[in-house]
Length: 439
Image (cartoon, rainbow, N blue to C red; front, side, top):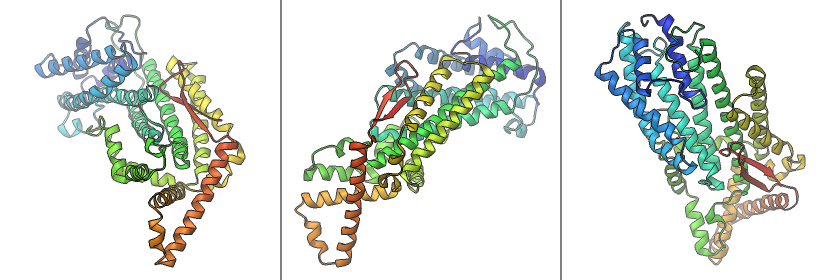
């Protein structure tokens, strides 16, 4: 392994953790570039200040300072810069991986240096973390800024759940390669020494936040998907008057090619990243089909269970670490508020025939109603042609009848039984995450 690895790992870990888990503060008296250079030099034992190290340290310092400057901007600029710079952090991660391998190979074989089971990849791990922070922040800030329309919520929260899951796995890996040791140097700290135990606790606190974010995004994904399938979230082209032209536009916008184009446009900032694996439209469609196999009411039930598990995990973290940071407390508020909203959903609503249908059945019903509206607007040409084939006419008639019955159940719930859903941000209490309520 690396020379003096047993003594240096907690020191380097404390340096890295202080940057991304210290409430946004860099607790050092030296320039950021010197901080990066010192950490690499201490880890490698005799790396020195070669050109390769200097270039990386300057680039890492510039990216880090730019990120902290971003935090001083307003929300729209924060989001715009975060999405713009995420590609730069992706490139920096590739450079950091090569640097990690080079540092480790000074005292080990090339095979060991390239093996993540041997090489901790500290600096590329840090860069990867920063990239995931920007990805999650850039995506969720769009909720506060009303960037997304209601019908886009399912794919936004699905993508967010994937990002937070990747972040959770990454932080879990970092915890898995730590061991209790004592730090060796106090000179770089302006306030006090950060012990190995404190460093590990900071990672665990951050891991608790990311795990809660993943569960919250998953629950919001399930709820928004159910609302979309029920027709509560309407796309702009689905709200227009039912003229023949408007219905033709509606049909065109519902085609897979149009959906894929909107998906690619919304997530174009993440599509070319090396890691985590970008969520493609095909994978998103396959995941959506899996959800559509379940009854719509089951999605609400499962979302409530996910939020309950998230609250239990956060309660355990609070008992262990105390109230936690402001971000943790605000996130806890959002989890509890959304849990209460689902708990208030009446049992007769969940057991309604409208929610007993699966997502795939709801999609077929809505498509049948749209086709029927198009046929009526076109002078009932479709029905005239269908008379030539009694089986086709009967099948279409039965499907349209079932679709109208299902839509009647949905309309009844919306008008009388409190299935109207309202989404709003949590204002000063973690505004990047929405609160939903059934009224």
